[in-house]
Image 1 (cartoon, helix red, strand yellow):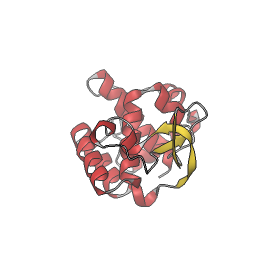
Image 2 (tube, rainbow, N blue to C red):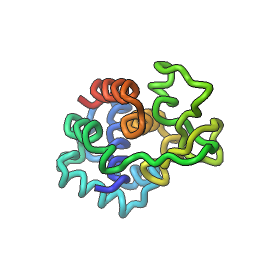
Image 3 (cartoon, rainbow, N blue to C red):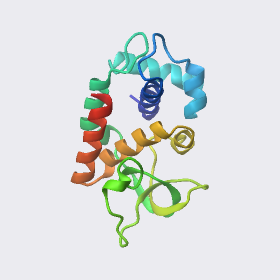
Amino acid sequence: MKPQDIIIALKIQSLNDKAGHAPAGRWPQRLLAEETGVSLSEVNMACRRLKESRLLTPDGRVVGPFLLEFLVHGLKYVFPAEIGRTTRGMPTGYAAEPLRDLFLASANEPPPVWPDADGTVRGLAMKPLYKSVPMAAKKDKTLYEYLALIDAIRAGRARERSMAIEILQKRLG
């Protein structure tokens, strides 16, 4: 399992969410590559690994309950959060939608952000799951929300993790 595998699974789920149902066939890998900033060859390998892990069906659908279980119980151990210095970037975790309105911002503690030259928020740098995450999040609001939720699981406090898990259960379970 590699970090880009999670990005691809969440992008497929995001596309399915927008379509209102799981498509009859697969989403084109070229589309997944363009929308996520993951190379076409890596998208192909990610889909293979996701199928081997049973997180993706042979016809290319995300297995929501299995993905949810991995995100909740395994992600923070396989891909632990790396927090750095204060920088400008895109909010993530509890500081981004859909958690942003559920938590009061602290004046004493800067929010977690993915470092991004075009970012509008100063906060503590949180290394994204994959280098192209900020670009992919700018293109797809639903994917951005999924990525922020999993960052809340990876690096959040107990209440933040709990709320992120509850929202993911509604979306994936």
